[in-house]
Image 1 (spheres, one colour):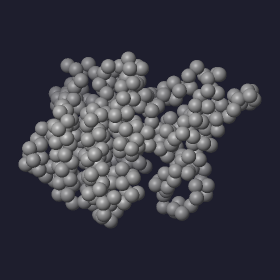
Image 2 (tube, rainbow, N blue to C red; image 1 turned 120 degrees about the horizontal axis):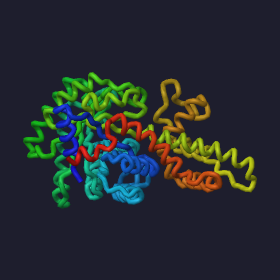
Image 3 (cartoon, rainbow, N blue to C red; image 1 turned 135 degrees about the horizontal axis):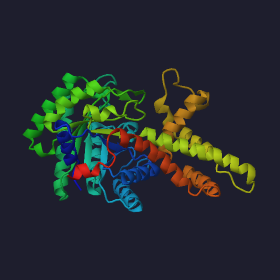
Amino acid sequence: MKSIRELVDTIIYYRQNGLSEITLLAVCPNSSAVLEAAVKAAAQNRVPMLFAATLNQVDRDGGYTGWTPAQFVAQMQACATKYDWDGPLYPCLDHGGPWLKDLHTIKKLTYNETMTEIQSSITACLEAGYRLLHIDPTVDRTLPTDQPLPVETIVDRTVDLISYAESERERLGLPPVDYEVGTEEVHGGLVNVDHFRTFLGRLRTSMKLKGLEDAWPCFVVAQVGTDLHTTSFDLEASQRLYEIVAPLGSLIKGHYTDWVENPADYPLSGMGGANVGPELTAEEFLALRDLSAEEQELLHTRSNLYPSNFTITLERAVVESERWMKWLQPGEEGLNFGELSTERREWLVQTGARYMWSSHEVLEARQRLYDNLSLVISDPHDFVVDRIVRVIDKYINAFHLSDSLARFED
C-alpha cells in the first residue's frame, strides 16, 4: 500500500501536468456505522480512504466511540474483510495537540500534563498502525481565548511533537509515517496568509535544524471559508494557498467540509484533502429517526411488540451528558434544554448524538428498534449504513475519486 505522501505526490504531479484534479476524502470515524459506511463506499468506488480520528473519538481511554487506537484499526480491518476490500485504508490521528482532547480542558491539565498525555496517545497511534499524524499545538488554555499563540511557539511545539513521534517510531522499529500540521481555527494564528507563510518558513528551518527533513508534512490545514456554521468553500483563497505549499511538496487539507455548498471546487483549487464528520453522524441520526417513525406505524398493527423508545432514549442521553452545552449560542446560556426552541433542541440532539452512539442505553434501544423493524425490513442496520454511504458518495464524486485507485497505482 502506498504512503499518503505518495498519494499527495501523485495529486501534485497530475495537477501540474494537467492530467487530473483529485482531492482525498478523510472520514471522521465517529461511530461504528460511519466507519463501516466509509469502508463500504471505498470498496464500491475503488478509492483510497482516510480516517481522521480525534482523541475525543478514539484514544487510550476508549474515547466516545469506545475504541482504543488498536481497537479502531481492528474494527476498520474487520469492515474491510466484510466487504472483501484489500485496497488502501489509512487510519489517521486528527488534532493531536495539547488541550484538544476535551477531557484535558475539563481536568484543567497543565501544559506539561497535557503534553505527556498527547505523547502517550501518539505512541498508541503508532503502535496501532496509524499512517498519518495531525500535529496541532495551536491551542493554549493558559492564554485568553482571544489571544493566539505566537507563530514561533506553534513552530517549536509542532517540531517537538514531530520529533517525539519520529523517535518513538524508530524505537518501535516502524516504517515511516506521514504528518499533517496547522489548524483551521482562528485561534491558531495561521489563517492570515502572511502568518501562514511565516509558519511554513520557520517550520521548514526548524525541522531542517533537527534533522527532520524526511518528516516534512504532506498536508497543511488552513481556513478555507468553512467552519461549524458556514458552508461556502473559498475557491480563490484555496488556490492561493495551493501555490504556496505545492512547491514544498505539500497540499492544503480542509476541515469542516460538512454540508459544503460547492464540494466540486475542492479538486479545482488543488485541495489535497478534506475532512467530513458531523454530516455523517447527522445522516445516521436522520436515518434512525426515519426508522423510529416506521416503528411507530408498525406498533399500531403489532400490539405485542415492546417499543424501543429510541428517539426518547437518545435525547435523554444527550441531555444528561451535558455535551449539548458546548454549542449554546449567545442568549441561550443558562437556559435549560427544555427552554430552547424545538428546532434548536433537535439540532443539539442530532449534533450531540455522536457522543452517545456507544452508550449502553442507546445501544440497547437501537437493537430493540432493529429487532422490531426486522419484521418488515430485511436489515435495518444496512438501511442506516447505506444512508451514510450515499452522503460519502457525494464527496467521492465531487472530489473525482471514483475508481481513482488505478490512477494512484500507476
